Amino acid sequence: MQPIENFKADTLKSAIKNCVSGEAEIQTDAFHSYKKLANEMKNITISYSKKGTSMDQLHKQIIQFKNWLRGTHQKCADEYLFGYVHEYEYRFNKRNMRKWLFNDIIARMMHQFPHPYQYLKTLCVYNA
Image (cartoon, rainbow, N blue to C red; front, side, top):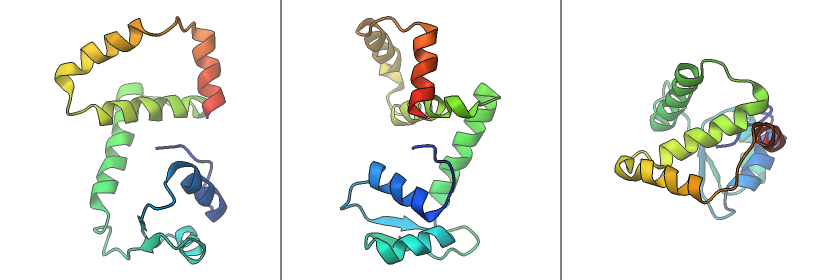
């Protein structure tokens, strides 16, 4: 996942090129920006939805992310959105490894150099 500024075709095209392999097949809804991209990029397939049913798993994940963000963090400053997305990604990818999650976090902490608050704040703003 990656936060983007807007949903214009140029912004989406840039995000897709940065995050998705050129060989990947991309399935989208009929949003007008994706229609423009489908003309330029051959690996995009548009699925017309019947009341949002074609990508229900994706929509469920988006809802879960929003609920997690509102429930856990309650407020989210735009400058730190990258950090929140990164944390959710980590939790989502480790969701089936709960037995080892604590050990994984401890091991990662032990192998890192200290991160003062000012460094973390700069890092989040830089990656946004």
